[in-house]
Image (cartoon, rainbow, N blue to C red):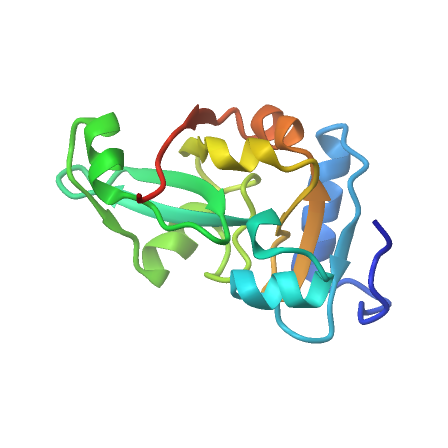
Length: 167
């Protein structure tokens, strides 16, 4: 797929840092940054020119008792079934607030990539992402994304494939 023309010439510091992180991990995936935001799944899909189902949402939750961070990677089209996630963890979970997200990942909501976090985070990947040949995820800023395959997503994140969407 061709990269759209509405990308910026130079990457912001956070996007460039993420690009460097990918290279250190041995991946040549290219981070692209857009002039308009990619903060939401729909904004990202519109900017890239792909279906919203090809966008990876990186959603952080925390266990209610222990405040342990848990990430769910899910298609931009879908919503996380928090009850299923709670059952998987054996503890009730709640959606993390912006402060907790930044504290655990080092990134702001809308730019949280699926990897490269400040702390080790248990990751679950919704199996519907495996239906796509190419997917796009945030790359450290609300304007930056990178493309990868579902297999690369699993390898990079060490995530566990699960059925976690609602419905």
